[in-house]
Image: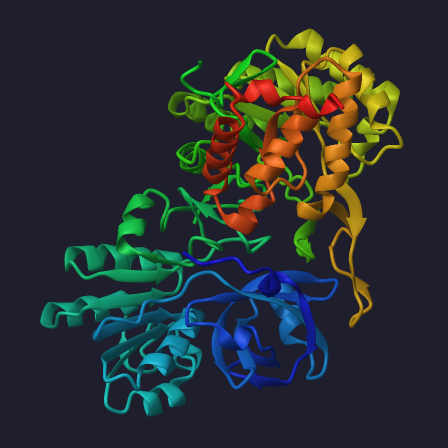
Length: 272
Length: 306
C-alpha cells in the first residue's frame, strides 16, 4: 500500500521545460521536479493548469530530476494543457499511488492507446534486468501507437506485438486477440495491463482463464488524490490511494464493477 | 465493569466506540463503509446529501497547508433518491449507526431530505448547516440565528430519529448558535465544520481552489475546535461530538476531557489511512486502563473541573 507523505502533496508550481508532439492529439510535457523524479512506474501525479482544472496523469518517464507526462487531448482540461507553451506555469502534486511489482522474470506488458504510458515507463525500468519481455501495444491506427521507435530500440532482444484496428501497422484486429494467441503458446509469470477499462476487463478474464497473475492500472475520476474524497472509489478500494495498480486477487473482489461501472462527478454509479 | 469500556451514547444512538467517520469522507458506497467498520469505527456519517444530485466544483478542490487541508469539494452527491439504495444496503450489512448528513438550499429541502433519509433507514441525521464553500446553503443558515432555528425545528417536527446539528466555527460566538440549535430541538451537536479559508499560488499569482474559498481542516485547527467544545460543554446539556484535527488517541482524549461524548475523524484518514480508527480506539482503551477509569463516558468533560 502506498504511503502518504505530506511533502508530496504540497503543490509545486514550475514552468514547463519541454513539449513534444507525439501525434495529432497527444503531447509529452516535461518539467523539473525532484519528488516526482523519484516516482516508480505506475504512479501518477495531480497536474494543475492554473484557473482551469487539476487532473491525474500517469508518469511516462523520469530521469535526473526531469519528469514527463503524456497527455491525450480528450476534454477541456487536457485540451488546454496541450495548448500550453514552454515556460508557462503548471502546478504539480505527487507522486501518488502504488506501482507495478518488478519481481517476475517472464513478463507480458499489454497497453491500449494512451494506456501505454505507464507501461512504457515500466519497460524502461525493467528492460535491462535480464528479464524476458513481451510487449503488446494496440491502437485504432498506426499513428496512435505511441513511442514506437523507442520501444523498438528498448526491445531489440525482446518480443513486440503491435495491433491496429484498421491494420495500418502490425496485426489487424483488437489487442486482446493478440494476447489470447500468445497465451495459447506461451506461459508468463505476470501480465501488466493499462488501457481502456473494457479492454482491461477482457485482459483480466483471459488472464484468469490461463491462470496468470495480472497487475492492471485503473483510472477513475479523481479530486483529492490522497484517499479522502471518495471520488475514485471502486468496491472497497480507492484508486488513488489503494491503487492505481490492482492485482488479480483485488480485481476478483471488484469484478462486479471492474469494466462495468464507475462513479460520475456526482458520486452516482454509471455504466462504463 | 462494562465488557466494552469504549461504549458511548449519543442522543439514543448506541456506539461501540467513540470514533466516528466524519461527513464528506469517501462515503459514497457501502463497500467502503464495511471496510472501515472492520477498523472499529463507532458510527458512520455519510457525505452530505441534498434533494438533487450535484456535480461539485472543478478541481483543484483540495490544497495542503502545513499538515492540514483546505477543501472546497462543492457538495458533490448523487441526490437523496439515488442515494436511497446505498442507505438501504448499508442498513442490511452494517451493525453500527448510520447517520446521513443532510444539506438543503431551503428549509423545506432540509426537511424533505431528512425525512427521506430516515424513511430509507438512517439511524439519525446530521444537519450540515455549516458548509463554508457552497452558496445559499450551509453557512448561510448556520450563521443566521433565525434561519438556523427554523431549519432545525422543521426537521425535528418531521422526523422521529435523532437530529444532530453540525455547527460552524465561523461565527463570533459559537455558544449562541449552539443554544439556538438546542432550543430548536437538536438532540446532539457536532463541533465543528471546517474553518473558512483560502490559499494563493505566488508563482501564478492565482488562488488555488477553483472556488477560491474553502474549509480548513486537520491538525492545525485542533486547538481552536477544542476550545469550541470546551465552551459548548459549559453551555448546553445535549451530547457534543468533537470534530477538528483529531489524528491520534491523545487528541481524542483531549476532546473528550473537554466535553465530547464522541469524536469524528476525517482528514486523519489521508494522513494515516483507515487504520486510524483502530489505532485511536486502542490508545483510548489503554489510557482508560492506566488511569483506572471504568469506561470512556467517565472522562467526558472531566477537564471542566479545575
